Amino acid sequence: MPHSAAASPNECVIDPPAFAARIEEAGRAQGFRCEHFGGVAGLPLIALTKRTPGPRPRIYLSAGIHGDEPAPPLALLDLLEEGAFDDRAVWFLCPLLNPAGFNCRTRENADGLDLNRDYKALRSLEIQAHARWLGRQPNFDLALCLHEDWEASGFYLYELNPGVRPSLARQMIEAVASICPIETAPTIDGRATAEPGIIRPEIDPMLRDPWPESIFLRAHHTRLGYTIETPSARALGLRIAALNTAVRAAVAASF
Ligand SMILES: [Zn+2]
Image (cartoon, rainbow, N blue to C red; front, side):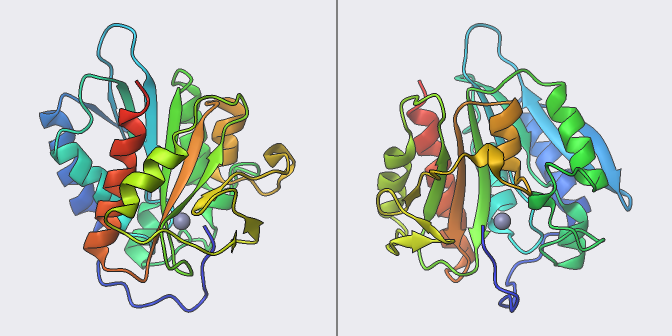
């Protein structure tokens, strides 16, 4: 979640219209409903949902809220094209929450707002639209927010699990460890780790201000949420694979 002001040159550029076209095509091929729940500067905010009848966990995934983090949207695209979002669950995907940021190649949106700090004030059109969209969905059994970290040397995650449900954190860390280093620092983003690569914030996250997406989700939409972070200094392919692996591990451990 932290970032440095001096971002490294981004080896990958996501073109939002081309990305939207590709992920919607992949989504339709996998039986997803594609919806535009808003837009900024002519760029759509996209949601893909797939509801298979019968009792199934409802799993939400988001990516692309920081325009200097290309691996998360590309990981969701890969997972979709690989058929990972199958009939085991009901799926809710928001794969590119900050299209203008990707257009400008900035972490923030076109107005300079960090959208992942806007879920309490709701100043941006993007997050206003996202909050309204979330309000139309049922609660989620699991939420995964995909990110990259320019300062980390390894993969790590935040867990928000106020109901003390069975944790999926170790499964994710163990799966990712086979392909990508896990962050070993005892303190990440100013917070002590509970175990290598796992942060369980001890202060009441509801008292935090501003709110990232994860806190908004915890407040209104889910009782089990993870923010997963892949190290931006590593090769893009490895970062995509690490996120892909973590998502697959969390989903597999959810049933
Ligand atoms: Zn981020």
